[in-house]
Length: 394
Image 1: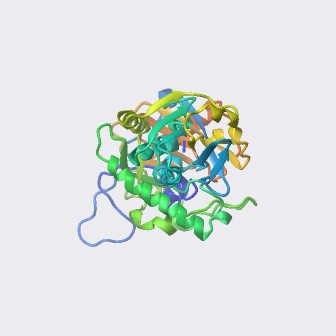
Image 2 (image 1 turned 90 degrees about the vertical axis):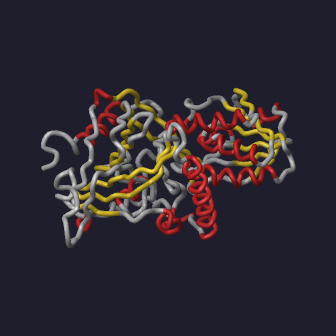
């Protein structure tokens, strides 16, 4: 579900993943002359635990050194790797897959296999088709039953992408290229039927003024890389602060950012439809060992198995990061997102999403538990409900 400069810090305005917001009127910190601006009015979110329709859990594949994009010979096959993006799989998918496809096409082969049908598998397959290849996807599961379909759906291109110590100048250039390519490609999905991709406002909400907020206390673990503001800040609109009294959430402090959001049901259906319309083939297959690749007729493969690569390739550099979503029925009148007390809310059109993201990027780190936690789901919903409950504005 899916941030280092992502969700948490981006909403906070210091570089992390954020959540969405639609505003009616606005007012910012500082003094203005002339007529007073209209107060920001946020339509109350219907946050109630009895509205939870589903609780889902996914495992994000984090690699301290960043995504794996090298090639490897496995018997007679050439495998191009495209996995290990942490919480940035959807966000970087088009840019990362552009690199993988370039390497696959350089072999001269025109019949190419893609292993996996998640974010990286689908984009790899589509880009291969555009490059003139005949493509077959081999996968055990298809959307919506893949891990990528359980992501939060927010554009967070540096969410747990690597540890800060591994963000070398070369890696930063690679990441920037992937992020910019993906960002530009996503513009082609705006305004389409079903709204697969859209821009939304997000509000970081705090009970304390910015000057009083304390930095996260170090716990001895290395920090994750924060690249968004540094390298692609020109793609992000200016953030705006709202003081108590200038909005409808009472004596709290708000910071607004704008981000892209993916409505994953519509988006994955669109990608799957395009792949089929372009002559793509899908075969249900499960690979237990690398020797199983020998039965494939294609000699060049793109490995987009995500967390599954840990077992299949014995890649112990892949660390699971657990993410859980509490889903409720869609709320069409809500067009904004929130981050409050370590909980995020996203108004996706395929169902509102509530998620405990914690106060540290290490929340859920090295936890591969896939069993839904009802208590955590209710905590997420109740935290957001507190912003709109009886007496909340005071």
